[in-house]
Image 1 (tube, one colour):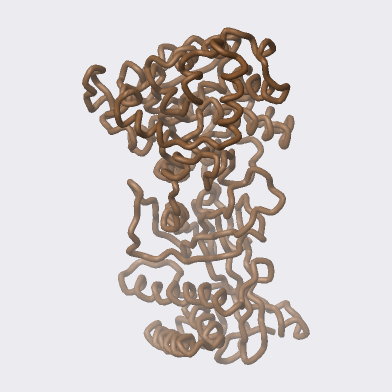
Image 2 (tube, one colour; image 1 turned 90 degrees about the vertical axis):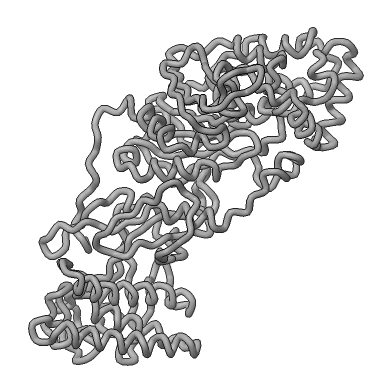
Length: 562
């Protein structure tokens, strides 16, 4: 049978051991703490010497101190408890650095020179076991770039989990990063045969999803689970390699290609919320909103977060076409499941230019857009069949049947005065279109003289060009028929003043950000670039998303170590 490090006695549940090394009644906590500190010191010395034996000693310290995490009440108790989490932290870290960790097999330690595999047991996750490739315990005293940090005390050690691949799951974010809480449990192996005891563990590390688990039951007691749901976002922000300007100037060679992706694996029954960033921005702009959404247990119960990213230098007409295609691909992949799950209730949230991309997902193009560009029909153009198909795909479309609600945040429905001012002109002139696109544009103009609008004849319009208040294409978008039954909402910045346009967020005037058909208009005293990061604006987005909720599901209470 497996046993304690010291006397090889059988080990029972946490805090209920029958051996002298674990019995609080027979041995004072101070004495046990002394042993734990000694084990930690030995482990640290071994680690400094680059010896993998440090993993065994950190494991010993973690097991011996595990009883300290029972009902904690005093300052002294919390001091003892910190020893356990220090040992558990180092066990998790060194098991990976010394190649003793495998996401499927667990952690390999040596007890009395006998190899033992400590299993990793996962609870309530939407992730697969293979996804737990890297475990990083959360450090205190971090620098952060979020408006708020969502943590709460309780049982367990908050960690960040990272996966290097997504396998065969399409539309899943690259290198997923998510939160977990680790609890070391000592198992009663009295029934395990001697033959098996040499390779089986007297312990297990249980990982819980803090987004979906609020409490665990341990030894008959309901205990709050420790959590840090902001940690994965901070982890991603800490390694962010921003290339916003480069992607804007040269959209064809952008480091980030246009892509719709999910932050978590697809979850049947949950409504997708698609976040669409704006001009000179990227998906990291949604960090605060995602942070608040994931901290709201009712939101997590009902919704799943998707993100659409694209190089903002290209025409937003092109970006809108790509999103339409990506939504169509999602429908093909998940088929009728997506239709029945979200009941046509997909929600688009667009910041700035992203709002216009969202609008082009919920409108009928009819002939309005094309007539703003050319006097001839697409079929009448002197152009190749492939070119005509490209133009047709960009200018002719029907609204997505899966989207029922759009939230516009600082969206320039009628343009921005900055687009036709000096700074806008300079920014637009910096954009480098790929040679193939330039050649196609030149051929169209040359072979169809005097048949295109000045906006298109002059050059291929950039997103900034299309934000000029006088843009025929932008004005044509305002005349498009909306999808029947569509719900629209606007969040508008009104704390600044723009000369010639009045109240604004510093970039988009209130008069441009207001959508006449919006069911609600929420005003925020915030600058344009931070509108989607404002906590009041974020809560308004969450409120709108939950309008259609029928029932709020409580957070799961699960038995620890099931």
